[in-house]
Length: 370
Image 1 (cartoon, rainbow, N blue to C red):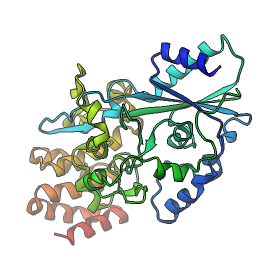
Image 2 (image 1 turned 180 degrees about the vertical axis):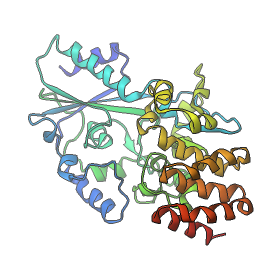
Image 3 (image 1 turned 90 degrees about the horizontal axis):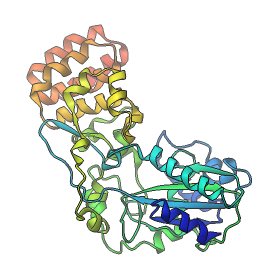
């Protein structure tokens, strides 16, 4: 059965496939609780830890999980153009969530011709930890940046899994503790490049990420972004690849010859100030980063303008002070002061009397620093 599945997967262009009988991940509980206790978790994570540790919540009769790995980012170099924002390379081309989900549907449909089974497809859309599942199946190892790393493809890999009620021989020692496997199977050695290159010092030396400081997270959250974290966001509109781009394990795939044109990852900042929700959906709805919506991208554009000192955006940003969005006012006021402190101090001070208490307090707090 395993060989048959591998043959079918290969015919469908699936580069890596493996199997695990582990359906419970209680060994992750200590790490998850540690992250919660230290406020390193994010609002995107399932609050009920039991659902994150047991596949039976998604599929009660789950016996085997089929895991797959698809590489991306071949020959990628950060596209650079003045006054443009940037998307993570994970947003290149069609939304990988949809593309990989369809690929796994193809696989299950092909398998249905030979086997009778029930299944549930997971592509970064369930409470389960995709990396832990793939690690358990023997796909790759966990690096110090907490990415799953493959010897050939590095960490530029999309992960997916299929929960099934099939009984398939395990590919890996199911009794291996996931936390121990993270550390003991890591081939990072004494290398700390990703830790040193992280723009916001979010990677710690204990295989833990402080999500609240991670630039990729900051570009996605709707929570308040502390002033001291904004500079590290640079011109990122969605995601961050810095820890992967600096990783020696990715040199091979990043230096491969590719005909892909990654300039599509550049974003017109001016457009983000003016585009409607419908226009945004039509233009960007097919890329992975679009799920967060136009307003979050626009907020990131405001931050990017300040970080790149784009003074020609001053009037556009100023206009946000007269709008209805408190989120835009919060970041616009900060950006204006960054672009032209003398011109902006009186402007923001005079707006205080027109604002809600929360925004008025934000303005006062900002002005106290100038």
